[in-house]
Amino acid sequence: MKLSELAAQTGARCASSDADIEIVGAAGLDQAGLGQVTFLANPRYALRVKTTAASAIYAGEDAEVTREDLAVLRTKDPYLAFTRAMILFNPTAAFEPSIHPSAVIDQTANVAHDVFVGAHVVVGPYAIIGNRVQLHPNVTVADNVTIGSDSVIHSGVAIREHSILGRRVIVHNNAVIGSDGFGFAKDEERRWLKIPQTGRVVIEDDVEIGAGTTIDRASTGETRIKRGAKLDNLVQVGHSCTIGEDALLCAQVGMAGSSRVGDRVILTGQVGIGGHITVGNDAILYPQSGVPNDVAAGQVLVGTPAFEVSAFWRAIAVFKKLGDLPKRIRALEKRLDEIEKSRSG
Image 1 (cartoon, one colour):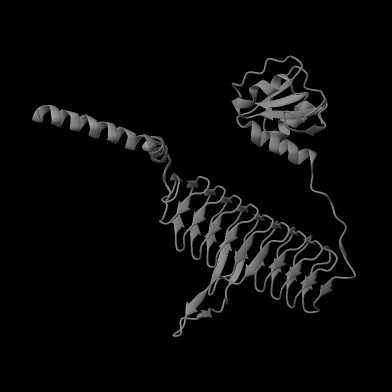
Image 2: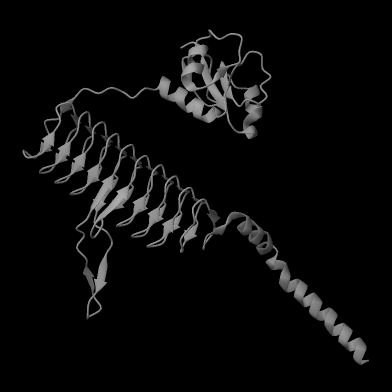
């Protein structure tokens, strides 16, 4: 499309005199070529603007771009505009509705007519599969599962009994939704007695779940992932947890049972949330943080146990000097001994 049209559709302002140049794709600074648009969101990469082969670039309103051969699209958020360009140039692939002959669909299941069901898919009794759903090869949909319209379930996913998935949900390969929660009680002989897991998992609209992620159903009640939440690969969500709207959970996050994460919370890689913990709206946890207590809304924490970021870095600065303390203490002790000896003499 023409540069001016691209600007209009991505929320940018064309600052180039040549608004009619043709743009055919979008790529990063190092990968972009002739006819493609790229972006500069971080000043750290400003030097790469000089060498990019792109024809156009999204840049902030005050970002300096001095190349005359590079058309500039000004915007408050270059990364967001570039993402919209990527969507424009990479539309969702269309699919032909079909059901593979090897698929096993229970006669009581309610499957829409315009779905894609791949090889060796199993759909259990009384399951409901909405319009334009895609079930890729080797997906297992257990009994009484509901999957909303336009959802995409990639190969190897297992969706256990009574789980409910909303519309436009994406579940990547080998995720498990609705497995038993990890619940046991110790009997009189100190043996573990399994607690029946009778609850369900509810996943609301526009949620994306990464590969290998596991979401346990509740012993009673439900585990709920709210609208727009995004879960990375290898995330563990324990039984009876709640994840808020538009929350972001990065790889290897673990949530113990009955914990709650608020709206727009960001849990970066390998964060661990203890059982029955509440993390308030808009909080951010840095990588590998351990959370044993509730987190207030809007807090930014790091460390194990997690505490406020600025205090953490001050503590780290002191920690780096701890190795010198024994030497300094010995020097002070020697000096004190010398002072005492001089006084006694």
